[in-house]
Amino acid sequence: MDAGHIAVIVVAAGRGTRAGGGLPKQWRDLAGRPVLAHTLEALGGIGRLILVVHPDDMPRALDLTRGTAVLVAGGDSRADSVRNALETLDGSGITRVLIHDGARPFITRALALSILVALDAHQGAAPALSVTDALWQGKGGRVTGTRSREGLYRAQTPQGFRFPEILAAHRAHPGGAADDVEVALAAGLDVAIVEGEEGNIKLTWPGDFAQAEVRLKGAAMDVRLGNGYDVHAFTAGDHVTLCGVRVPHDRALLGHSDADVAMHALTDAIYGALAEGDIGRHFPPSDPQWKGAASEIFLAHAAERLRARGYRLANADVTIVCERPKIGPHAAAMQEALARILGTDPGRISVKATTSERLGFTGREEGIAALATAALVAA
Image 1 (cartoon, rainbow, N blue to C red):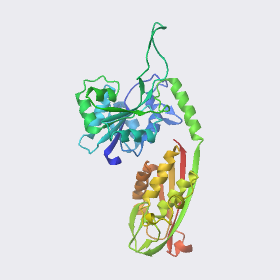
Image 2: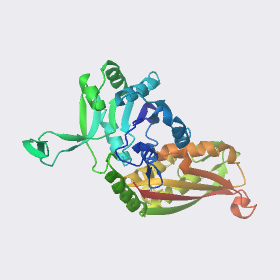
Image 3: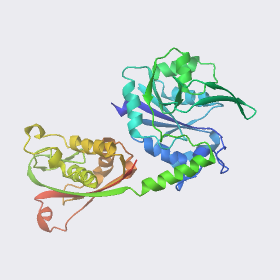
């Protein structure tokens, strides 16, 4: 699934203050940060981020995102805001889009990806939960009747669509839709129901914020740290591969795979945080299929494992130890490469280098060493 063809629209232009606090709920504080910061963090790395905000909130949004999202001014209604965002993507090469409420900060990456997968067979897909409680009708504080709950669902976001179809649907819709599925159905689109998540709540009332604070405090206690260390010797060649970036050099690194010593250290750090051993356990060097393999395969597997275990990467720190080549000119590209593989923001990845002051095997330029630390938190 190519993230370059996916856009994630986060709708946060509303003025709703039912949750109290004197601010629109998406800007209220939750565990020390705005609600919207949690939402954007959860969706980082899936695709191009588009944040729709009220014009009055543009300065605040710029300070929050710092270039990690494209900002779009909202309209008079939710449908207008979504259409504004969709129009900015016309002709951009985007083929699939997720549309999410900014006040749903507990969206998981697994749910978002399941919606994107469903778009292989459907024009639209959205998460929902079956209604399990009895349904009443009432008036004046009294029960006046009941209603069958069969076939009823509680809708959630993100709601996903093939881009050309949802853009055309919004352009044709007269307005007033409750959500994007309503717009899609009015245009005759096929929308699949994906099993939603109970935790994917929309913060609306003061009590919702109290529950969210408790949830975040509980999750914050589940933190895992892992360390990784790797060494590779030099051999004949004209470049080294470090953190997925080809760096010209008068020698290469010797290894069973592509010998990306820095990526190996980071991969082992993640496996270590999960208590799942090291690269050799998952990709034995005795197996010929991994001969010359790109180390991206190993790191991507570690990233899949951390998500499958219910964690997200809080941050990672990689230190490369060598006299040459110089790492500084390539550090930013290395951050970007690692962030892409891990599905996170480059600001959560540190890549730096040091020498050993001409001491030891690295000082004698016999090889390169790398150390890495990874911090995981419950998603």
